[in-house]
Amino acid sequence: RLRDGDRCAYPLDAGGVCGSTWQVELDHVVPLALGGQTTVANLRCACRAHNAYAAGLALGPSLMVSAAALAVHARRGLDDRLVEDNAC
Image (cartoon, rainbow, N blue to C red; front, top):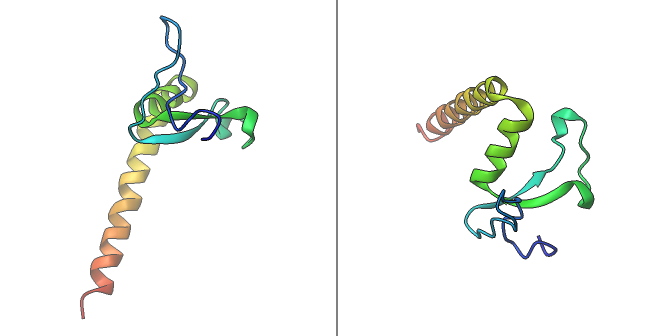
């Protein structure tokens, strides 16, 4: 984050980088699913939109839809557990 100044470092077609400070996340340049490492050289700051876009390009849309569905399912399960825990 320090190297990228907490700004999106996703490269733009017109040159330069995005530079957004909104919802900045750490992005694996080579995704973990494709053998990428969690190293400084393989990480960059990316806004949530560019992180998702890069993942879609690298992993393909069908895998991204599957991952999104799993995340929703996991979130619903967490919500159900929270309701059950607070039911008393």
